[in-house]
Length: 394
View 1 (cartoon, one colour):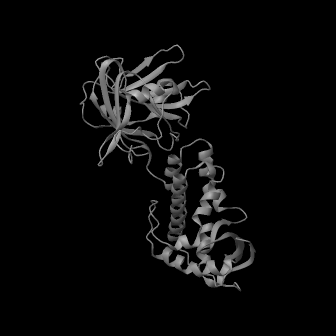
View 2: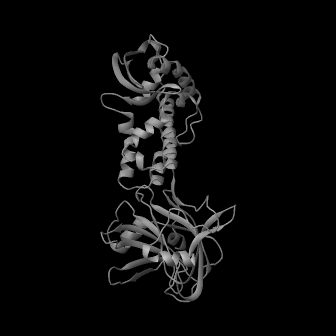
View 3: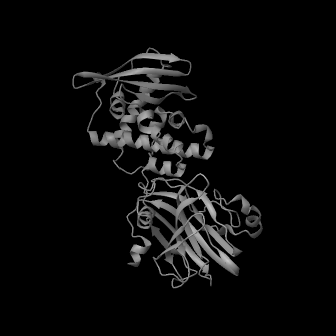
């Protein structure tokens, strides 16, 4: 309904008695909105909206702040800006796409405004639209800023912009999902980037990753994991000698939305011992209250057949791994991987996994004086229809 009200509001004549009033200021900008709606081609993908017209009508900061109200104070400045940009694109394109498909035209005589109420820097006004010989009403909520009055919410008796179109993304963050996943869902993206290790300097420890506190001294002394590469491309480099420490990133996304996990890696120095891993990526599906994980590891190992499953029994819990690469695969060369963690989970454990992941960890390990080295890059969760690594092998 919101989109219908925007369209007809654009054709309504001004009825405000004050040129400084919210009703007057909003409606003087709406003819430009009509022109933008009429001229912009329809495209279902959510790219840049490309017009200042909607920006003049809507207060994106206020809309985003109210939409993410439960988590706003805990979001970084970077994520506040990124989610505001995603909100702008999503709402703008919904208005544009709906209008292009509706075939509606605005008629000045079919709409009128009334009941403008102003309290300080807040205001609201009622818009009544004649549709099928009946008036329908919506309320515009406005806030006054440095550039005048702007809309921050639209409401009808049954529907609200923030509550019904945007608040669910705030609920995702409250449920523990990462902002990267929420942003990808807002924009309808094909992939959710977990990490490409970009915008970092060679030699730095990778941002947003960590390790167990008990390993603090060893991690600092040995510099096992650090950013490698140059200005053209940066990646994660792992160098291990007589050490086995996992690099962990809490990262929660929904496996149903992005079924595949993809990345690329290269093994620069393969281990001689089959108990060591040249490279591995682990998906953590669940952790109990004492931190015991339910996980699947994807391996580059030696001495095991490609696409075989390795189970190791432990005192506290068992581990499960799927071998993607071995010593027969080329080293010192970037290789792409694609796995379906949910399908692998059901194949190994006999039941579907939780929809929401807990995180990932990376491990290159060496149980001897031999230096094992591997590089990792471009970890993504995706809905793209591509063959899995073992599917390609078959």
